[in-house]
Length: 501
Picture 1 (cartoon, rainbow, N blue to C red):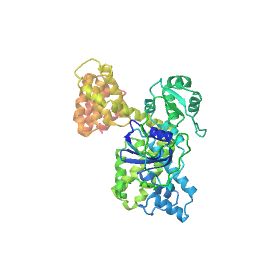
Picture 2 (cartoon, rainbow, N blue to C red):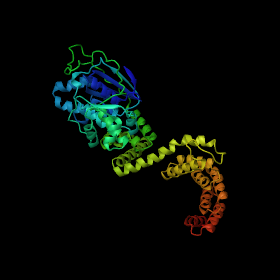
Picture 3 (cartoon, rainbow, N blue to C red):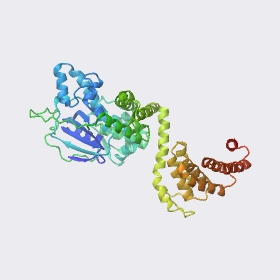
Picture 4 (tube, helix red, strand yellow):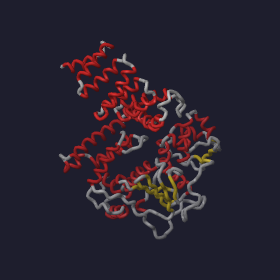
């Protein structure tokens, strides 16, 4: 059995496998990351991925059970059996480490909503690697961190009937809203009616309902399961106790292949990833919904693997200097994201940039309308209103230091309404910052001055450009015009004084 996570996300697959009591291995893949979750009679007993940070040996090293110089090729099964056999690792201690490993993997993959999946009902895991996991709690926690729009999209039919699950555990740590919603469902109720009773916003209520469903506390009328037929040899008889594995030859699932990369290539790949990172979340390789625990875990993992002190043999090289600079960026990202106020400010900046990027395609379409002085845009705004939106987005991008995005926005505004001096002036100002586009900047600034010759600031912008081009007399002339219009203009006075010196 196989499919796409866009139709059946990981959390729903695990919810269904748990409910139906299947045994086997759920294998999932997203980009270059592969993971597997193993089940016995519907219970998660192990989860692993091909990320180095998720390997059992890595967790054993972190807890001081084995040292870093151990055999990297030994399988997890052989490693555990050797440790248990030698008496250097107690079973209770192993279970604690395995639970930590499984929890880390599950918290990552439960948020996956794109990629591919397959289920093999004949795959089983060696008993030594199996561990008890609180799957319901992990599913419930995952629902709280999922993208809100995604959660709402999985529960759109307001007439759908919800009913309580037959067996509800009291061990789960519910949020007040979740507990209240669950208490309102005695027999059956529609989604819309439950939302009306909740006193929550529509989206918050739907997210909570979706989480209760994933945790197996609610049943849904119209949920489309992924498994139309049961995998062979996995279904427990109705009402029966948890089935015990039959005494057949057990197939030990091989560990997922870990990409074999030498330390230097791994470092180069890490630096390349950082170079492409556009925000603090991408720097630390976490989702925008990551909690403080996930952020700290990612930071400490990066520090263990890529701290500049680990690569002292590269000291004095450009690579080591790049690594030091990159680690300063990592530290800045970490300190920002664990501080609620700093993180909120960072998220606000990202929203501004997201709006700028979302409008890039609209800018290109607007070019076709530049000859029209009026008319309606695709969004229903007039061309003048759309141009003003682009200008404001450019001003926000410029304030954040993103000059390329600002130039795109100012350019679009100037093309849509070429007779607006403000658009031409600021477009010219951004062009003037790049030596390669200063000649184009002159044309835009001259156009702005011609359209509004009484604006002293436009003359100052043009003067700055002439100064940078080495045209001192032209710069002084523009500054004198600016001072004639605004004798109190301090910037014009300072520039003129510097030119006279």
